[in-house]
Image 1 (cartoon, rainbow, N blue to C red):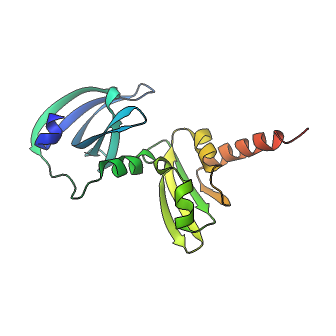
Image 2 (image 1 turned 120 degrees about the vertical axis):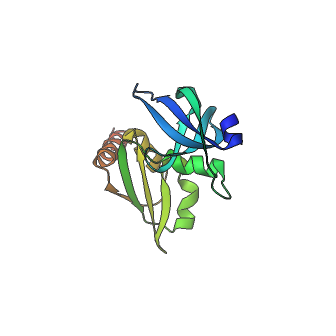
Length: 170
């Protein structure tokens, strides 16, 4: 927390749920609590992008002498939500046949970035480590969808659809 206040870069020793470990240099911008978990919202110099790291998975922190300037008008909660749907194992690309503003309330923010394609279509782009869970999130969208990208997601949607169809059989 002190590094955030002092705007000092840090080296994080991090371990994923799967057990992968690495050290990454970041500009720590903010800490946000979401669904009972604490996250560090930061800029990762390793991948030159915004990232979020679960605090309970950080194994060590070493403060550096370098300082940084956080983004102007940073909304840490929005940055966390936007980033939750990025950087995972499987890419996702879904077209939704409804206007962006209509679709917005149906799409959880943490599953990707919702973009305007035209006045009748929105596009959801992101990534996931759990295609089956992602397919279940897509099922709550009250408009026709088309999975354009992510063979793993396409298969998960097929599996979910088959399971739901099976549930209607006597």
